Image (cartoon, rainbow, N blue to C red):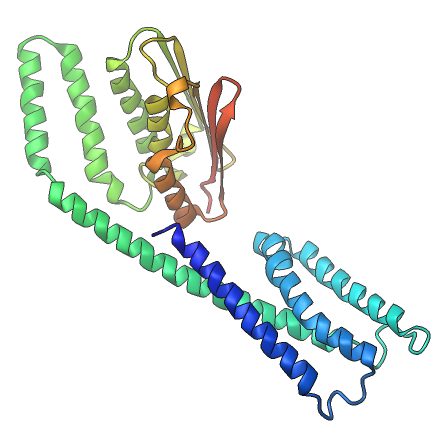
Length: 336
């Protein structure tokens, strides 16, 4: 369902442009009146061509490439250059009859009307797409919540059971087992309670990651090397907030695809916070069984949606194969 929507939008856009183009040509050719009379054939032809070409340039190149990336200087230079090119073409076609650039019969008005119409179209189109996307996300959220409610186990029962097992492990003098139960209990509390918060202190997310990796080590062989490095200024940690459980899917992915009991494998996870930006890099040995087009999995697909919703253009994500390694790089602006 999700993959069909962009195609549906594109098809609707093509139909709209085709209908608008036919209507525009009919009006331009047969709708001549007193307004058109002062213009010569060359000027009139340039006006008719300038509007759709400017509209398309601004809609599909200038706005997405420059304006939406806040490169306003490049945007205005590109618009001005396009106007100048149109006027130079008009000047060359009119020579030597009318050899004046930006003379009385110019295309400036038509050009800027096309730019304005283009902006109105882009704003309206993006608004409609955003409304539909929000509706889709609400439906997905509702479906997820319903599925969760169907399978939910009373958390009090789980914690009470864990406490009982913890007490039993102490009675049987199994400190390692008791410590593992405490770590698992901490992870469960974080999942059930702290994950509901919009943003949490960065320390909690890091604590979750450390305990998660320690529990993973319990089931792994000695031939699997795991290196975790977390570097940041602990004095200013109270100011640093992050969306809960945002980093863990990348780490889960490493353990899911980078662990082999048959071969020696290595997992490297480094997290640094510099000038309000968190930078996380995960690196694992590339296993033959994990090489597939769907490597990113549902977990990373969902976390990319969360990143788009929470951080918009304030994050960078890159992942893929590099030699015999699979590497993920994530950079988020925490100051947003």
